[in-house]
Image: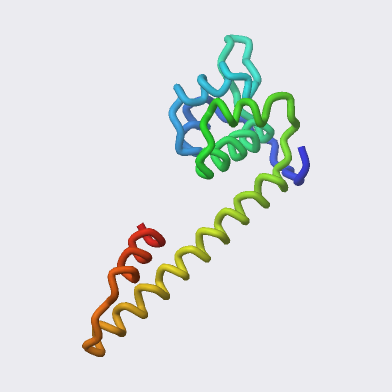
Length: 134
């Protein structure tokens, strides 16, 4: 795993699910698909460490980018965790989202200025706003 994480902490399935905003059922599904491989106690309880959390971070980042779980499974199959790569992908996606929001806000501001100035708004402007902002 690239990206240094120094903390040595183990979480139960319930603790991990709560902190990550997931369900225990989702953790089990990710394990069944081979996406994570949590450590087991002598009583067969799952324990999640930092490498598991980093992998979950990758999975959630890819899900938020719109990838299906099947696609994520194919993408991550047999691949080591690359936290820096995942963070770079998240950064690029957020920058694109921010740019899209700024463009939408500019369109809305221009339309509101036209309304305030008593000017009509062309139908193509409303369509552009609907397509860009919605």
